[in-house]
Image (cartoon, rainbow, N blue to C red; front, side, top):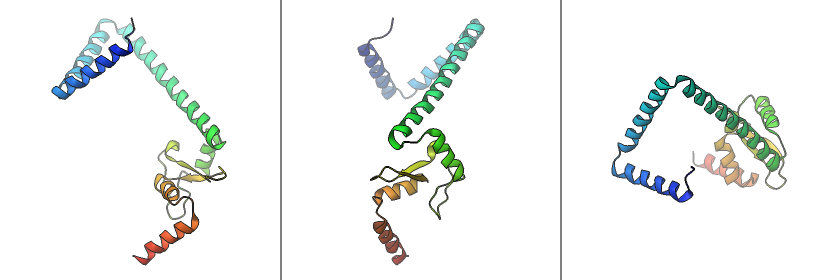
Length: 155
């Protein structure tokens, strides 16, 4: 029978109190869980492996769901698909579009989609630092030039 929300909340609070009182409590829980898994594997290997396969299936379904969610978010917010973003990523050779930066992206989610906040038009993919710099400069070219002049002045 599933736990009620109140029971789940109580168990969560109890676990947090135990961990606060005894830092080794969570380690013992992990050790107990490992012993339990080993025992299940020894006693019911086929059932245990079937459970692992089911967990893998769910995990893969979750990965597909992440792609679906990312695609919907891009489409709703910017009017492009995940495939469009991948094409931009490939065209930029997996690097930041800002000249002089060229920071390589480790993966597609790490590439930030730069867009015009007034028109919503997508520009290019940027690294986190360049995207934040543009955002803090409020996409104002004059302000960013002033900042560059300030940096040059104080070399």
